[in-house]
Image 1 (cartoon, rainbow, N blue to C red):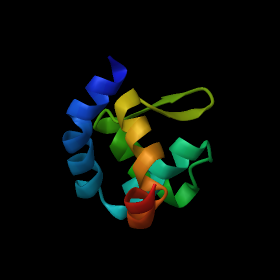
Image 2 (cartoon, helix red, strand yellow; image 1 turned 90 degrees about the vertical axis):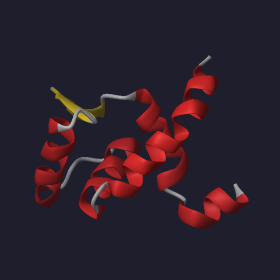
Image 3 (tube, rainbow, N blue to C red; image 1 turned 60 degrees about the horizontal axis):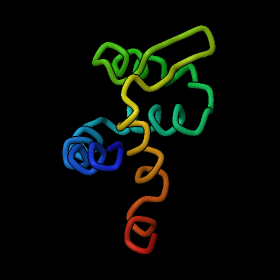
Length: 86
């Protein structure tokens, strides 16, 4: 079931990723890898939180949407060549 939901949401997730400013993409990648958000990126993180993509808890930012977290983990880190060659 999760695979089906991810497959159906893929185009939507990709459009959200593509439309996000570079600073927000970097924040999403940082959260995906478990890294801390740099002070210069706090505004981008707050914007993502305002739009419901991230939430903040006692230990930092987390994804609000598991499907977006998976998309970032699967596609954003490796770029074009990872998607092309796996």
